[in-house]
Structure formats: structure tokens, C-alpha cells
Length: 481
Image (tube, rainbow, N blue to C red; front, side):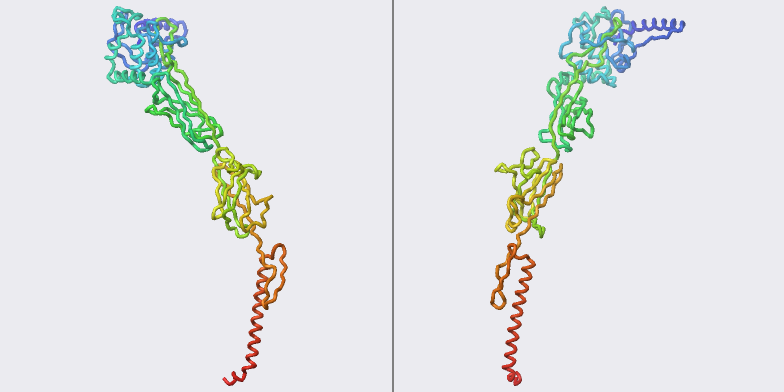
């Protein structure tokens, strides 16, 4: 809202000057007031020297940017008006704004400076004049005041706004009261260990001066050793109800970190002072300040596991009850668990696992990647002969992230032994030499066959003799029979 009459006179003079310049071949450079969005209200608030029939409640366009005036009744800015760097906003009378008013203005400028709503733009203009040009006494509302001394009559202007804009005034005021600064922010990282490649949820909060969440605040996220939807930078808003942003972060390295930045209301809004005398000061932002926070955790690769099988070397069948020590690649130091701690038993040595009924045992939750070995502690019954305590059976391999390493340890069964003497079929003993702790299985089979054959031969001979004797002694009887 500005004094367009003074502008009109200046514009007329500029037009006349432009005609003169054109006549001499020089370029014209006149600019005009360019309103943005809002409402024109009538009649205008009266004061001495104000011939305008209406007032403008809304934004202006200066340098292509939407701005609002904060020095009621002074001249409206041209579209190319020049302004000096910002300073703290004060009232039209040069006094400091109350802290809560300054906080409300900063918040509203941060929230609504880019509004495309005529209701919100008019409401913002009305509130700015209400706070910065409020009368200090009743005399400042008298029409006898000049543009320098006239105060803004909030009731006078409010009743001329459309109902929708009046509702916007109440809504913006309530929004500012509830959500003004100073703001704070916080990042909450997951408490459980993070796994590289496995997403988990972080949260980002923005709180107002009352400590409650602020809705729809855009927050820029920058990630290190991590991504969100495959990206390392992304902007997300807080929830519509002020709830925190739930961020699904996928670690890609050992030190995932999340850094955030956001614009928050300044403690005091900043105003720009026009270079030209008696032109209104303007605001376009609240002189917002940046809030930043960072949180980091550590992440490890996905755990792995080992599936161990203890088998008979010849049959491939599992051997139950076999104790195996779980070690690192050197077969001496313990393997490492997912928590980074050495896997040791009560004796402080590498942990021992025992195969089940099917000859297998699982070793879960191993840190990855790492080389692990399983080393046999003692030979199971029936496998003692081939067991060398100095070089026990073992198997090694690398456990990879999220994978299961299969290890198989085979045991050579004992060689069966036979008696030193083997009974003969006719009751005599025949010596059989046992070499190397006993004959092989093939030898045992051969000897068994010979014994059986000898027994069978004896039986045939005995049967033959008996048949001959009977034949001779009883031939007459047979013949007679």
C-alpha cells in the first residue's frame, strides 16, 4: 500500500522527460508501480494529501520479485526500485518490534513469501501494516495526519477485505502464533547395528518455539556412505501434521551419515531500505537463518554362516558327535562374530561345535568377509587309526556377506583286524600272518571263502565215505528190498 498520487506525478514527469529524450534520440527509462497479487479496497483510509480513492492490500513486484511494503502510506515502489542491503525491521515510528511480533513476521515471510493466493497475500500485507504501523495513540488515526504520521487502521481495512481474505488473516495469525521461531531440529538414527546394503529408517524433526513439530518444512538431506532411493542428496518435507520425516537410508559404506539443512525464521525479520526518499521499505523474506544437523553411525557387511559336515571318507555318511574347533585362516586364532568379537569358548580358546545326528552343524552370524576353518578336536570312535593330532582333519574357506560357506571334513575309518589264527575245517589250526595291523577287507573275504570251501570239502568227503560204506554193507538189503 503506497501513495500512488505522488507516484502518478513522478510518472507524468518521467513521461514528459521521456518525450524530450525521444525527441533528442536518447532512450526512455521510466518505470511504473507493478502490483502483485491481493485486493484493491475502497474507499482509501483518509489522511492529509492522499487523493487515492482506494488502497492496495497485497504484494508488489520489484526486480521481478514479490515483496510487501512495511512503511504504510509512503510512496509505493517502482518495479525497478533500488534498495540498500537489509537491516532489522522496526516499526514505522523507528521503534523495536516486540520479540513475539518479530518472530511472527519472520515466520509468515518464510512461509508465505512465495504464495500465489490473493487471500494470503492480502492477509500478509494487512498483518504487516497492523504490526509495523499500529497507532501509538488515537490522534495518529485522524485524517489531519500526513503520510509520515498517519497510522494504519486495522479495523478500517479488515472490513473491506473479502470474507475469504478476512479468514486468511485469522489463519495466518494463528499459524504464526503456533509455529514461530526459534526452531530447532533433530536427527534420530537407528539404534540397532546397520548392515551395508540393508535399508533402515532414520527420522528428522523440526520443532517450533513451543517444542512441537512444524508441518511441511522442506529439509535438504545430504548423505555420506549411504543413499535414499539411490540418491545422495534429496529434499523432503516434514509431515502435514508436523510429524517427523521418516527417511529410509541404505548404507553403502562403513560410515553412513546424514546431514540436513533447512531455512528457519530469523530471530528478527530483515527489511530493505529504498534508496529513493519517501519510498516504502519492503520485505520479501524474514531474513531466515539456516539450521543444520548431522548424525552418523557405523555399518558392517551382512553376516555370513558356515554349514559344516563331518563324513565318512568311504561311505560319505555323516558322523555324529564330532567336536570341531572354529578358527581363522591360521587354524589357531578364533574366528570373528558379526559383533566383531572373537568366538571363544569358556576356556578362552576358539569355540568348539559338535556335529548332530546327521553329522552336520551350523556356525551362524559370522563377520564377513573372513577366512574361517573348522579343525577336528579328537577322532570319533572307529576313526582313530588315521587321526594325526599334529595335523588333524580340517577344512577352510571364505565367508562372504549374506552367504553360507559349506565345509566338509572327512574321516578315514579304521582298518578292520582279524584273529592271528584261523580255525581249519578238520579241527587243526592254520597260522595266518597279519600284516600292517591286520589284513585288508579283500584278504578277509578271501580267507573266509577258503575256510568255507574247506568246510564244504570235508563235508563232501565225509558224506562220500558214509555213502560208500553203506553201499557195500547193505547192498544185499537194498537188493532184497
